[in-house]
Every structure is written in C-alpha cells, then in structure tokens.
View 1 (cartoon, rainbow, N blue to C red):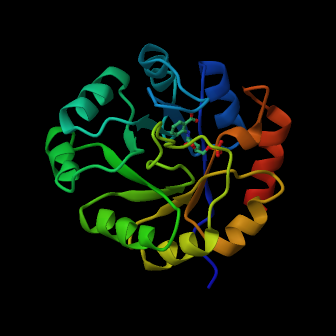
View 2 (cartoon, rainbow, N blue to C red; view 1 turned 135 degrees about the vertical axis):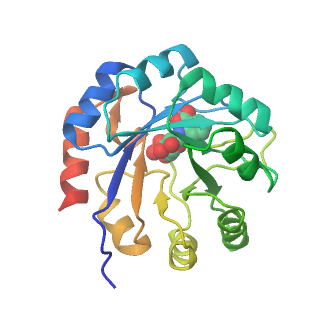
Amino acid sequence: MESPFRTRIKICCISSPEEARLAIRLGADALGLVGRMPSGPGVVGDELAALIVDSTPPPIATFMLTSETNTGDIIAHQRRVGANTIQIVDAVPPETYAQLRDALPALKLVQVIHVIDEKNIDEALQAVQNGVDALLLDSGNPNLAVKELGGTGRVHNWAVSRQIVAQSTVPVFLAGGLTIENVRNAIETVQPFGLDICSGVRTNGQLDEKKLEAFVRIVLG
Ligand SMILES: O=C(O)c1ccccc1N[C@@H]1O[C@H](COP(=O)(O)O)[C@@H](O)[C@H]1O
C-alpha cells in the first residue's frame, strides 16, 4: 500500500549554522547533531550544537544524537544542547523513556536500532512498547570492542527493516549508507516514514549542495 505521508528527510552530521541553512533551504525536515561518540566522523561539540539549535527556525526539528545510556547523563546532554528531539543511539534500560518524559515532557524520543538480524525486530517492538515516539534503523554494531553507533556509511538488511516498519505503531526512519544511487530502492523496499543521511550527501566531509539537491529531488519525486 502506498504511504499516506510524503517521505520526511533528516540531514545528519550538521557541523555549522551554514550547513543547517543549506539543508533547510534544500528541503530538510530535521537536522541531526552528533554528540560525543566512541567512533564516527560526524561529531560536533555541545557548544556548536547549541548554536545550531538556536539558529534553527520552526518547524524544523533538531535531533541531538546521544551515546549516553544513563538517564541523568542524557538529561544533562539535552540541557547543554537544547534540541527538541533526542536520538538515543545505544541500548538503554526500559524505564529510561518514562524517566526522560518526566524530566523533559516536551521532548520527542527516538530510539536507534542497529539492524543486524531478525532479533532486532523484537528489540524494536519492545522500544515501541516502552514508549518511544519514533524508531530509527541504522547500521552500527554495538557489540564491537569500540562500539559503532552510526555514521558507518553502510547499508544493512533492509528486509528486516521492512518487517519493523510493517509492525511498528510509531514512525520509522531509515538510515545507514543511503545515497543518491540507492535511495529510490530503499524507499520502495522499506517504505519508511523518513530517511536519515550523513555521508551520502557529503564530499570531503562537507555537505555537498549538488548531492543534497539530487537526493531531495529523488526522495520527493
Ligand atoms: O556520524 C557519526 O559520526 C555518527 C556516530 C555515531 C552515531 C551516529 C552517527 N551518525 C548517524 O549515522 C547515520 C548513518 O550515517 P551514514 O548516512 O551511513 O553516513 C546518520 O544518519 C547519522 O544519524
């Protein structure tokens, strides 16, 4: 069945107010700001992230990616940055979402699921049960000695992602290795609510206007 929504676009790894303005001008619905991570190319400091949040107009959403797993540390991170959405990139105890809602009631909570195999379907549905506002399916590997929590430039098993989308009662974003070349196939295969992209619209680490323009054109048809 065709989705009743237009596919939403989140541009991640925003590293300056200029990149934020470019992403918004070209059609981004949301911006991603990557906090301290064990690995990955997109990290920005909290002060710069806060500056970008301050310069972002409504209705554009600001997603703060956090690798913190302790409720108090996630809250402290959010207070430093001020984003309106928290993207939790590692597994957290089930009670975390309710604790975050008590402390930060206006905030939206997005749980990242790193899709490796079918076991991740249960993990995703459990996060929905525990109260997240949305899921984001990425290609990291939290089981490595140095955890990969995103920003890998790799695609994962989209057949598993499709099953998660079909069973989820909250919106699902697809991330991980999306490019101009594969995004049409990604939309048709997975049918996500939204897409999240970092390396696929960058050249030498910088947001690339031509790539982003082409990406948006393909997504919005
Ligand atoms: O970019 C990073 O450094 C990063 C590190 C740790 C967690 C998430 C990170 N970025 C996110 O990863 C996805 C996928 O990136 P890519 O498109 O495969 O390069 C990206 O959308 C960011 O949300």
